[in-house]
Length: 87
Image 1 (cartoon, rainbow, N blue to C red):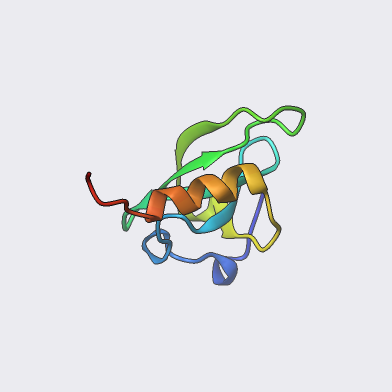
Image 2: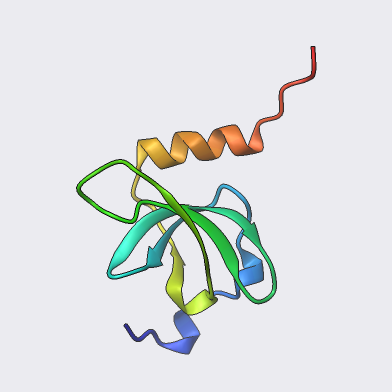
């Protein structure tokens, strides 16, 4: 996998719940959990044949924003950013 450096966004430009593609034996759908200047933590689908997820850390060349919808991941991401008051 090789990407032009001009096409790679800095890791710190991502925000929690951003929908992304991550490169892990092919491009996989994921959602940003956290970002730092050096890397991002992503929940992603490691296999295309089942709905399980994994969490891993990726450097910027292995991440890019996605526009495609993946309801299992994207709906989970909405719960990450919503806060419910304590009752």
